[in-house]
Image 1 (cartoon, protein in one colour):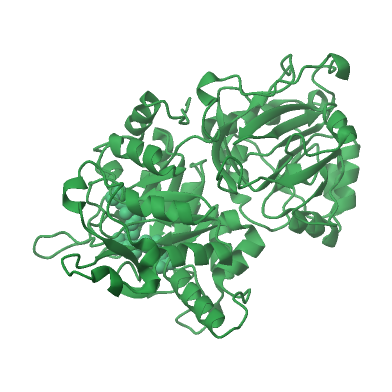
Image 2 (spheres, rainbow, N blue to C red):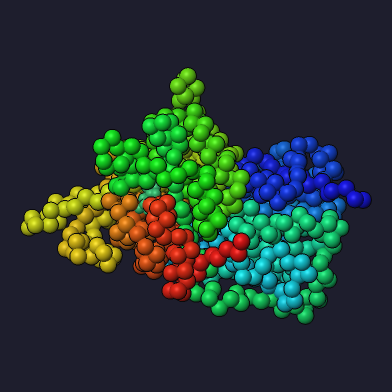
Length: 588
Ligand code: 1PR
């Protein structure tokens, strides 16, 4: 016809669709949002970036009367691209939501990853993982490429072997890629005719993801409406069940994730700047003591994206002083960054129930929602999480139900999924006086799980730490106040409340360059089953290698060394690669 295909996005209001919109704009395409049923008829191509929970998506579609029109659209043969939950709703059902039915385009069940697999595996499956074409014979126009890594975040998937014989056979009618998480193999993208779907987020998968999206956007609706090539008869098809890349044979399948963190606050002139402290003190040591200014938040985040950061984290470190929604500049930072940064964005600071100066109250859920709509993928909760766990423990002590469903962690994870809720922990070491003969008898019961002796100390700290014993005390308000709670209680408490990830800082190591606090990281990692991001103290590429090999953490974060250009993200990845660790390499 010569006219440009009309592209529509279906949004049912759950989570970050801004990034997908941004990536499409970035690739030079226009789109419209589906606003009414008639829009399905106007659309030549449709994208559904489902986020959150299966039931929310399936029931949300039904509640808004979009279920039937969507099904009709897909059956009409026009191109559909489903992302994450937008892929899962194509399936028959999900064990995430008993009784909630999907579109049943793919008659196969969605089931949950096994967190006990191989001893222990973090669920959600969160991070960068590869994918391989499972059918012998390449797709004529593959969107997903073997050799690239893509960003996943989900607890449920079309896990191979979980269907009955008939379902397993029907799955073979689709052309698909597989990915491995631990010993479980799942469908990471699939296609048949006009239906295309990815379990990963192309809009969060850096250049490789944008490329996949671009190929779909460029293809004419007609070429997407027929199968790229007729699949061979089922009996003749070989399914490649293992990752063909030799270097990916070991481990969970995930790459070791490198996170660049930007602590943001306003300086004395009132501008938002990236700053960085030593043990949380961000002012210059000399007279006058200005807030250290290491650059502008949006620009720096862009630089880190281009250098290959797997994730960017913004922490508004003084937000506990004011209301986050009144904090328009921080929303602007997230919005600005999300325009050109196509890896996951986390934003923390002030995510809690607040009251504006004019008396208007805002729930933590509202505050988080404003950040998600601006382009954040996850919010990080600090001080408030400590208070929530204290209150939960007090309720339990009184014999009341532990969960109220009212805390920020609970409300946000219910609405946006637990993967969207990070808890940032700021523990501090408290040493015992081990010269006292019976010191160990005086250790309160509360601390017992944290009693350790530096067995995993780094090469640089070993000499100082030998023979000492300490526990990790929780702090709030950027390390200013200590609370009577150890780090394990907090970590396990927030996991119970529904947090999906822990950002584990260390007040002692922050800005020290002495290496990560390996004892701390191992302790917390062993205590929870959600992913832990190791933070504070990175001084060299070797420190990253050490934290991944010695603690089994999935992700490591640094700030100072990156801001000061001492170590590049590629230096870190090179060191990890040399040691045989999987990393995501960007092909810009
Ligand atoms: O309590 O929910 O409002 O959240 C406030 C957030 O701000 C928390 O996540 C808290 O950790 C953070 N924060 C508060 N004060 C400071 C400060 O520095 N004065 N920064 C602060 C935390 C730690 C990391 C840092 C790593 C790596 N800084 O963000 O990036 O330690 O640093 P390094 O690689 O240079 O060692 P709420």
